[in-house]
Amino acid sequence: MASNKITELSQDVFKTLSKLASLNLENNLLSSLPPNLFKTNLQLTKLVLTSNELDKISATHFQGLKKLETLSLSKNKISSIEPHSFDGLESLKELFLNENKLEELDPFAFRHLRSLNILDLSNNKLRALSPRIFDTLNSLHELHLSDNKLEKLEENIFDDLRNLTELHLENNDIEHIADGTFKNLNHLNSLYFYGNRLKDINGKIFKGLNSITYFYIEKNPIKSITCDSFNEVPSVEYLHINEIPVEEFSADCFSSLKNLRMIKIDKTKLKVVKKATFSGLKTLTSLFLTEGQLENIETGAFNDLPTLERLSFYKNRLSKIDREIFRGLEKVDTLILSNNKITAIDSTTFELLPSLKFLYLYSNNLRELNNDVFHKLPQLTHLVLSDNGIEALPSDIFQFSKSLIYFDLSRNKLKIVEQGTIPTAPKLMTLSLHANEIQAIKPGAFDNFKWLTVLNLSNNTLKYVTSEMFTGLNQLASIDLQNNKISDMDPNVFDNLPALRKVLMEGNKLNPTVLDIIKKKYNVP
Image 1: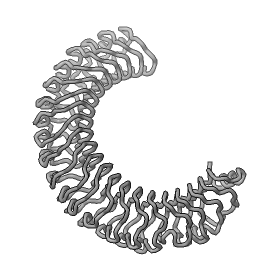
Image 2: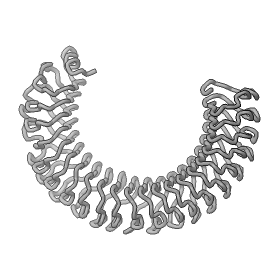
Image 3: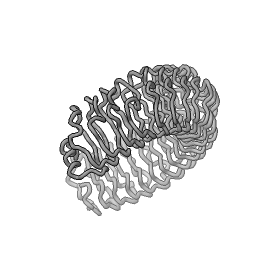
């Protein structure tokens, strides 16, 4: 009966359906329900009233539904729930009241729902909760209180929720959390309270959260995080500290988090990573310090991180990188330095990263590179140097990078491509020269790239294309020449490329007939 524009139901519409187990009235126009509407439907286990116009719930609506397990009242206009409305729903496991207009709740609204596993009250207008409103909900696993107007949490409000595993408090107006508020939530593994108004946090707030693995401190005006802040959450594996105005972390701030696998610190006012800030996190595999104001990293900031694999400083204000910050990071295989202000890289910068495979340096201010800058990276497979000011590269820059398969040099200032312009990389499979200033490609320019399968030359200023430009590319499967200035071309120019399957030529000045021939030849839609 879903999506039928039903505006009302008669008192006896379901009277003869005594064996009815599931009823879906979703997406109708019901503004009210007759009292005792389901009095003969005692076998109901699922009732969906989502997306209607209901504005209140009465104590007579669900009487006798002892077998009901799922009740969805979300996306209505409910502003009032009468006392005892859910009494007798002894089998109820899931109750959805999200996206309504609730401003307050009866202190005993959920008192008899001892089987309840999921309670969703998100997206309402709740400003406060009765201190004992969740008493007796011993079976509750998930509690959703996000997107309300809650201002504080009282100390005993969650005391009976001993089996809770997931708690959502995000996007409220919470300014204060009493010490010990979470003291009985020993099984909680995910806590979300981003988008609130907390100004500081201390370890006492989180007392009892012994099992939490996902911890989100985001979008709060927190200016300081003390060293004891994480003492009560030793099981945290994933820590997000995002969009808060914190300016510094003290040494060993995270040292109590012995199980930490990932830290993401994003959009803060952190300018300096101090020595020993992240020291001793022996299980950490990913560290992201991104989209911030970072200007300096002190030597020793990452001491003793034996399992670290991914390290990102994306979109900060770094102008130089000291080799010593990488000391001890032998297992790092991914390094992201993109969107900074780096103007030069020393020959020794990466020599302490022997396992590095993925290196991202796009959107910096690099104009030139030393010929030996990558010589100590034998496992490097992916290199992105796009969006710098590079006009040329040393021909032997990849002399010891025998594993390189992906190279992005797009949005730089190359003008002519000839043999040696692109340094030889014997296993290279993908090369992007998109959006340079390339005017010409000399014959034999790609002779040393016999394994190349993808070549992107789009958005340059090429005026013509000849078969001699691409000699030796016997494995080439895709070439992109879109948005150049090519006005004349033999449609058979690529016939000597036996593996070619895709040719993109849109955005040039080609005769439409020639363009159609190429499209048909290479099955381009």
